[in-house]
Length: 394
Image 1: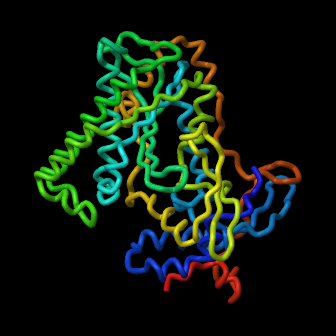
Image 2 (image 1 turned 180 degrees about the horizontal axis):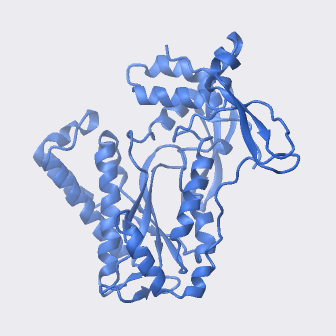
Image 3 (image 1 turned 90 degrees about the horizontal axis):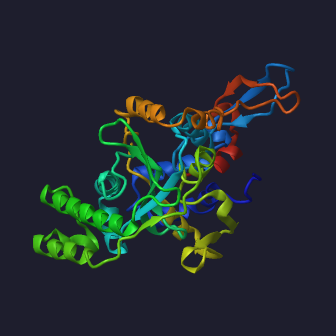
């Protein structure tokens, strides 16, 4: 993939100081830290290293270090490849399904004021819904395992919290003696999933309120009243709760490439940014309401950064979680059981789908490169470089 002409880092360098002057009172330290990390990523401000080929002795130029912040658009590729390499060991020789759980827009302000609590509830309600409906004998009648991925944004960077679930087509029978498969093109009825998901999420909201786990500010302040909150919960049953089942993709030869599109994403990739000047940003977005039509949007630099920073996750909050027999405490035992119950020859087809991320290879002989010397920022930066690479947080 070619290098994009513009990056989020460019926008921060151009408008970061103005943005902080405008929103300084409301910016948190984590937000400032992310801005600073992205602006410095792969610049002399973070230091660098010289690499040498272990085969032919080719000496590379200086490579600048990455910030490794999980909200940085440039730092996700390596982490994604390592994660996918581990996931290939968990794939089964079955079809996989992709479901998306989203909440009504009415809930977004409350969720944004209680991110950690309600993002967790979103994960738990979606997972409990899938597990409960799947084990029902009227549907699959089996215990399933799956992974869930939290996204908090829409295509225009506005808040749109939703959960992507990637689920193998089948599960373990209650006695753990058989594998029960789903039809190749149908997993679970989305209308049933929607109703159950709504009930579980609203029940979780009610519990959180009674346990004083929610905070209310600004437009949500009236909800601190118990009667008003109860009325608010009733209105949620009148809203549309969408569980969307995407067309199923095939077996394990497809699922890793598919997952690569959803894991380790940030609110916007650098490749969607089309133009940047001193005051505005233009980026590409997909209009799902009109047959995925490609459109463009232009925002001020300050508004773009405001929208981008809305999607910072709470510190230490995992955006990928595992449930059912893929849950961390059960995976080692039950995943082996699933494989034993599935055709062994089909299993072999998934053995070499993805290799561990390759080392940087020599452009001359294609041998592995190794670090020859590490360079500090002080060694690399002069006065002019320091001004260009660092985000002013003073």
